[in-house]
Amino acid sequence: MDDLKAKYLGRIADAADESALEAIRLAAIGKKGEVALKMRELGKMTPEERQIAGPAMNALKAEITSALAARKAALHDAALDERLRGEWLDVTLPARDRRQGTIHPVSQVTEEVTAIFAEMGFSVAEGPRIDTDWYNFDALNIPAHHPARAEMDTFYMHRDADDDRPPNVLRTHTSPVQIRSMEKTGAPTRIICPGGVYRADYDQTHTPMFHQVEGLAIDRDISMANLKWVLEEFFAAFFEVDGIKTRFRASHFPFTEPSAEVDIQCSWVDGQLRIGEGDDWMEVLGSGMVHPSVLRAGGIDPDEWQGFAFGMGIDRIAMLKYGIPDLRAFFDSDLRWLRHYGFASLDVPTLHGGLSR
Ligand code: PHE
Image (cartoon, rainbow, N blue to C red; front, side):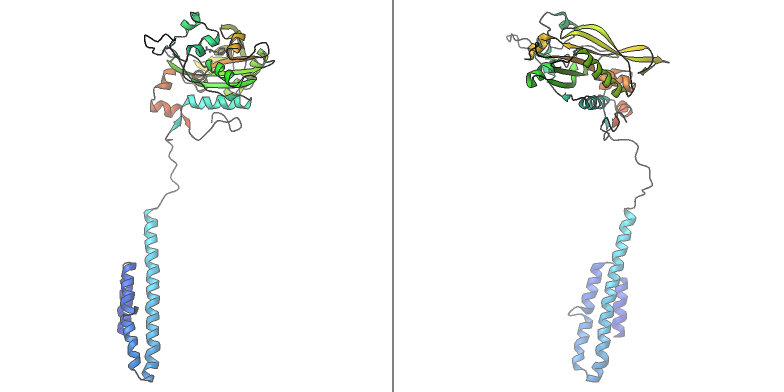
């Protein structure tokens, strides 16, 4: 019995894994194991011998059983330690500072503009980038042969030679969405429409595709005063400068009467533009009271309703707010530029959370 004990406790101590342990268990205390076979010998013993051998054998079996359990636990702990060592992680390492993707300034500013106007009760409308010349021009009081058509550097879509309908256009502004949204919701209405527009033009401040946001508010007694308040409210929130000054200059658009171009207060210090201070002016948008013919084209009775509209360059105000000098770089898809001017992708601009952090 002492030999059996020494043999199995030694093997248990040397077992390398759980399957080796199981083999030892079967060989020792399994049904046909050595200890079990020894126990059968009890039957041939005298009662006196049995009195001594019986408890001794039970003790041996118990000892082997508990040695097996202890070794099993030890192997388990060792495996866990091994795994913990392999999966070790230094939580004191600094976080990776390079963000994997960023939000483009145009998307960022579109979100900012939307958040500000949403607060003033404007909802977002959208329209197609390829539009008919009726929506882009005629309905906006720009009939065929009107000089404004030539000024817009329009891109025309292809028409087959035997198709005498006027060609569709890449919309030259977001104003056609005024008409589409009047048709859809009638009056009263309050919408903004951000989106891409196209003109054949290319230099530091012009690209053939750029972005505008249109605003339209129609009600029974909307006036220029409402327009001015809304825009000043917008500029203060967008540029994060309270009481920013605006200047309304009389202008002309076929679709508004009267019309005004709007400048915001700025200054140039050491060649750097500062918005909201000083006594220079920077033009940022066109606006006016919606022309009666435009209301009529949108199915709204101009004797009952009136409203204001404005159109502002999104890329332009992004350049002003974030100090981006060249518009062309917006659309070059240069990763270094995108990383430099891009915004963290999980920061959604809201008025309460801060617009531009
Ligand atoms: N659509 C005009 C443009 O692109 C801007 C504008 C919109 C002016 C609405 C007045 C009213 O230049």
